[in-house]
Image (cartoon, rainbow, N blue to C red; front, side, top):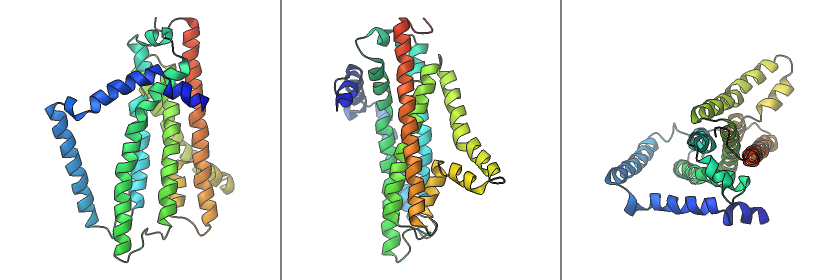
Length: 278
């Protein structure tokens, strides 16, 4: 509770960013082109759902879960990679470091920038997943082609996606706290995500030649593999749920650790009295 009060409720950086955020999203402040763009996006979104429903026998609700996971990873990285590195590059980080706020409050405020975009993505992609599940069930089809329990897959995928979002947020903030330019932060973030989600599965596949159990254990921490266990489970449901749970826990722990490390990097800059570029 004390942490919530210090980092969120009484955080002056968050209060200021909230004020500017609500001013930006208020419809009265939107220029005409923004209003038109949002209207077009909304129309296209519902038209695509309507068209997709025409092929409901070929499209599984799990498709939207995988899309949600993929988009969440990219959005988390894109929104946050320049938060600290950008402030440092523009020399505005110096002002934050001498302000009456802690390093943790600065990082918390920057991190919360991505909360609404992520929640919006999850909601927008959960809606068609639910619609498809309802329509498939109403038409006498399996809710999910694999025969998996939709409620378990739906809830489990949401928890998994949120945990992966936290991991990517923490990783991106850590990389941004280290780099002096936004270009360096973006490159570093993409490189680490590539290693974690592309190279790592390849390595686990190679290890299968020597030890299948070790390969399976390592690959189970990959979010896409864990999600596959939820939407297309093997007969042992408990094992599949356990895999998704462990994957979520690992991502949450790593994400929190990265955020703490990012805060410490900012705090070290404060103690030095100047930002690295000063």
